[in-house]
Length: 389
Image (cartoon, rainbow, N blue to C red; front, side, top):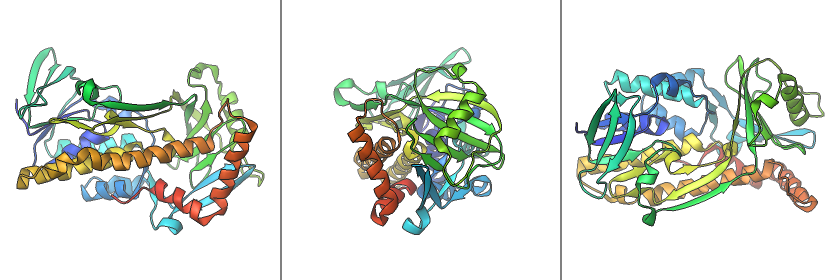
């Protein structure tokens, strides 16, 4: 079987790239190890930058996001018993939308299938071959049969644990990583929203985050030991911890409800460079991971595939290869900016077990500066809503 672009992974990066290519008349095939039901039900956060919203709308897959997503013009930082609002729109002229990642995936899958795009689910034993030639290929098994997909280019959009990054020679690849000594305990709750905007809380017991999924579902997090077990946390213990960390002296209270999901996620910063080798290109989590504090993960994936779609449009329509050659440099400029911001937000808001009293006071001083200085607040706001695409 032959196609122009072979895409490994049906996450936001792979699906959106396939759709953008389709809009430019470029063929692609997506290979995915999971079922459609699995990719559409994996719960992930969804803070969408203005640029991401614009790309989805321009691609014709933003209607449900605009209807069901929640537009936020600010966020709140809570510490010392008080909440402080950062007005994103007043400071930057832009906003963010809260719309869960699995909902974006549903929209993209529906768009690809409506356009008769090919997504092969439940593939196994995927391997990449001959990427240094003009005729790379991907081999895989599906339904007990072995297949070989020939393509002009291969895109690795199969996440941090996928096979694409490791298919690049170790001799040409440099990996940069920091693993944080804490994780996030996340819950989904059946209740009305506790707040109209996201609340990022810094507390001596650790970080907490209050966010909303819909008019009837809240998504709440608190800092925890990444090696902890969700079974150690009863509902009563969870609520006691959240109340202690997020409630403020003005009488505001967190709304409780039925907890219907609990999970623990680890925290890491990771970048692999270069993001291309021969005719293999990496996108999204296959090339970089950010801690979720900065809300950058899916937005970086969208930025990556936007660059790739423009590069392939140039290649197939005009025969130019300048944008393909510059992909790593162009993508990493945004990636490292987002890595720094996500690291900074994480360092600003989390409790570090080895922090000295001196370091704790520095953390508080920086928080006070961010909420009292327009220049500092603007820096946070610009990075949070995302630099223009």
